[in-house]
Amino acid sequence: MNTGNVRSRSGRTQAASTVAAWAASALSAWLALAVARVEAGPAEQAARMYNRIAGVPAPADVLSTMTTDISNGQPQAAAALAVQAPTFYTVVLKNMVIPWTNRAQTVFAPLNDFAATYIGMVRDDQDLTTALSADILYVGPTTGSIPAPSISNNNHYAALEAQGLDLSNPSVLTKTTQSATYGTQAPAGLFTTYGAASAFFINGTNRAMFRFTMMNMLCHDMSVVTDITRPPDRIRRDVSRSPGGDSRVFLNTCIGCHSGMDPMAQAFAYYNFDATSNTLVYTAGQVQAKYAINTSNFPYGYQTLDDHWTNYWRQGPNQALGWSSALPGYGTGAASMGLELASSQAFAQCQATNAFQTVCFRAPGNSADYAELATLVATFNSNGHHLKQVFEQAAVYCMGQ
Image (cartoon, rainbow, N blue to C red; front, side, top):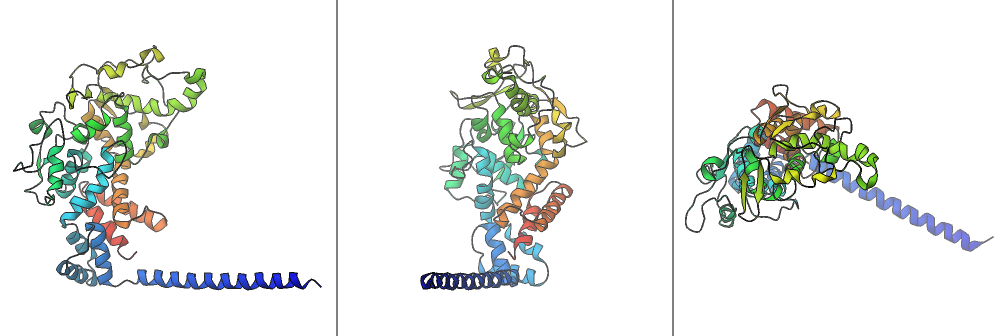
C-alpha cells in the first residue's frame, strides 16, 4: 500500500474541507451583510440617499428631517430635500455632464457653458427635449475676477467653478439666450454652446457632433445603430465605396453608419468651429468647405448643397429608438434635427439611465432594475421632461442598497 498517496489524498481532503468551510463562512457573512443592507433603518437610508444625491454627508438637521420623512413613508420628500443641496449641481450633475463635452470623455475638465446650461435646465425643471434646439444659455454673475461670458472661451464658467459659486441659486446661475449673449446665429441648444462646438465642430466633417450626441444624449454609439438596409443615396463623396479595393467592406460595414448619419449630420452644414478665431462660425446658405473634403474618394457620392436633413432611421430596425409621431422626420438646420433626436424614446431612456447610474452607483442589472427604469422613463415623459423627479425616484429605489 502506498501510504504517501493516502496522506496526499487526506491532505487534499482536509484542504478542500477548509476551503469549503471558509466559503460557507464568507457566504454567511455576505448574506448577513446583504440582509442588513436591505433592512437598513430610516436613518441609514436617509444618509445613503443624501450622500448619493449630494455627493457629501448630510448636515445633521437635514438628515433628521429626511429620516422623519422616510419613517413616515414619504421617501420622495426626503429625496426632494436632498436635491436642494448645492453640491447636487456643482459636483454630482457637473461630473455627470462634463464627460459629454469633450472627445476624451473625461470628467477632469472645468465647468463650461454646455454643462452649466444642462445643469440650469435640470434645476429649473426645463423641458429637456428642447436641450438640442432652444436658444438657451445659463450664465453666472460678472463681478470682480469673473470675466463676462465669451463666444471664444469658457473662462467665465471656469471662474464660477473656481470661486465655488452656488449653481443651485437662481440668482447666481441665470437663464438667458445664446443669441443675446454670444450673438449666435441659428442657435441650437447644447449643439451651439462653446463647449460643444469647440470639441465637435472643429476640423473633421461635423460627423463628430452627431456621433457624440448619439453617444451622450441617446446612449447609443454608432456601432449599436448600424443598419446596412438603409439606402446609401445621401452618403457623401468622401466615403470610399471600395475601401482597400473591396466594395464588400462598404456594403457590409461602412454603409451601416453612414446611410443614417450622413443625412442627419447634413443639418450642421453651415456650422464650423474656427480654430484661429476660436469661435463658432455660421454661414447661412453656404455649406462649409469641410463638407467637400476628399470628394475624389467617390465623386459620384452625395454633394451637400444645403442643411436639409432626413431621418432614414424612422424605417428599419432603428425605429426601435422611438421617434416622435408628432414630428415629420425631416427638416432644415440643427435645431429641428436636435428636436428630432431629443423627442425620441432613446433620449428619454438615456436621461433616466444616467440618473439611475448616478445615484445608484451602478447600471441597471436585473429585472427589478429594468422595471424601475421603465417607471423612470414614464415619469420623465409624463412630467414635462423634467429630470429632477427622475433623480429623486431613482434615489428612493436605491436607498436601501
